[in-house]
Length: 452
Ligand SMILES: Nc1ncnc2c1ncn2[C@@H]1O[C@H](COP(=O)(O)OP(=O)(O)OP(=O)(O)O)[C@@H](O)[C@H]1O
Ligand SMILES: [Mg+2]
Image 1 (tube, rainbow, N blue to C red):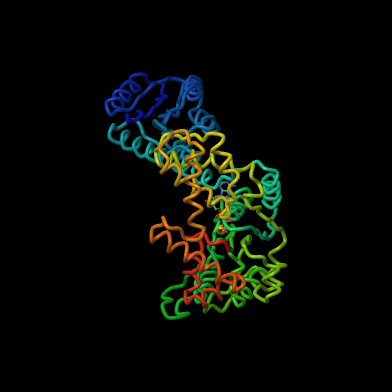
Image 2: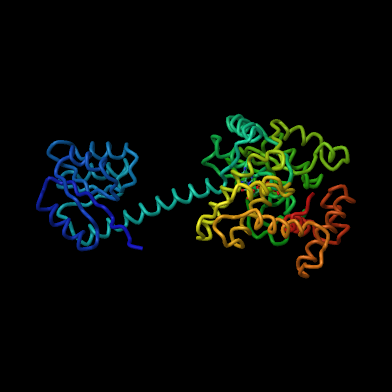
C-alpha cells in the first residue's frame, strides 16, 4: 500500500522563507503548498483537507491569530504550528491555548521545524486512530432491527437515557440485554464517563463484595493495597449489574444499601463513600418466581424495577432476522477479509423460520460458521439446510454421525439442563448438585448455549 503523503500548507508573506521551508519538507516526503495572506489561507483550508498548517502570526491582510481561530472553529482534522517573529512569542503561546500544537521562532531552524512537524503529525494520527476506534466500538454495539418490538425498545431506551432512573432489563439469553444497557448509557449525559459491566454470576461469592465495593489494605490475606470496587470505577457513569438474578441474598442486601443511600463501604473500611453511579441491572430469570422462592429480595426488586425493559426473543420478531443476517455477514466477511457473501431469498427464508433458542447470539455464531464453511458467494437453501441441520443436531439427542466431542457436548448440555430444571433454575443449587463451582457452571452454560 502506498502511504499517502502528508499535506502541509505554509502560510507566510515571506515568499523566500516559504520556498526554503517547502524545499526542506518536500525533500522529507511531505507535499506542500504555500500561500501569502490570511484570506487565501482560509480558502485553501476549506477547499481540501490538509494534515498540518504552518501559520505566520503576522500576515498582510489579517492577524494570524484570527486565521487560527477561524480554522479551529471548522471541523478540520489538522494540526497547526504557529511561526512567530520578533515580538510575537507571547501571542504564539496564547495560540497554543486555543488549539495550536506548538510554535516555532524565526529564524527557523530546519531540524526543529522537521521534528515539530513530525510530532504534530503523530498526534494527528493518534487522534484519527482514536476516532476510528470509537467508531468501531459504536458499530460493534450497534443495535440492528426495525420490527415494531425493536422500535418500542428504542423508544424506551430514548426515554431511559434522558433520566437517571434505575433500569431492570429482562429477556432470554442472547436477546441483547447488554446492548440495551450500553445504548442507554451511550445516549445519556453520562456517555463520556465509564460503563462498568459486572457479571454477578461469574464472580465467586467470596470475592463479590470486594469486587463491587473495593477493599482497604489489610482487609484480608492478600489485600496488599487499597483497591477500589466497580461502583467506584463507574463514578459519574453507569454500572451494569448483569445476571442479577444469580446474586446471593447476602450480596443483594449490600447492593440494596448502596442503592438506598448512594454510598459504598469498602471491605475493611470504616467510612461510607458517596458514589454517583447510575444502576442498570439485567437477568434472564423470572424475578417474580425467584421472589416467591425467596431467592430474590422484594425490596431490591422494587428499587431496581423503576423502568422495566423486556427484550423480546428473536422468534417473536422474525422480521429482524434478515437485517441481522445481512449485518453480520457484512461484519464477519470484513473481519475475515472474505469476499462479501450473498444469500438467496429462499436460503434467507430458512433462517427466518428457524426458532433460534439462543437468540441473536446464536444467529451471530451461526453466520460466522456459515461465512467460514460455505465457499459459494451466493448461499443456496440446500447449503443452509445442511448447516442448520448440523447446527441443531448439537442441540438434539446424539446421532451415529457425531464425533466424540460433539456427543460429549450434547450429553453435557442435556445433563446440565436437567439439573437446572431440578434445581428450579437456581445456578448455585445446580452447581452444588453437579459438584462444580458456580462460576464454572455459568461459563459452561454460556459455552454450550444451554437453554436456562
Ligand atoms: N439487536 C441487535 N443487533 C445486533 N446485534 C445484537 C442485537 N442483539 C444482540 N446482539 C448481539 O448478540 C450477542 C448477545 O447480545 P447481549 O450480550 O447483549 O445479550 P444478552 O441478552 O445480554 O445475553 P445473555 O443473557 O446471554 O447475557 C452480542 O454479540 C450482541 O452484539
Ligand atoms: Mg448479557
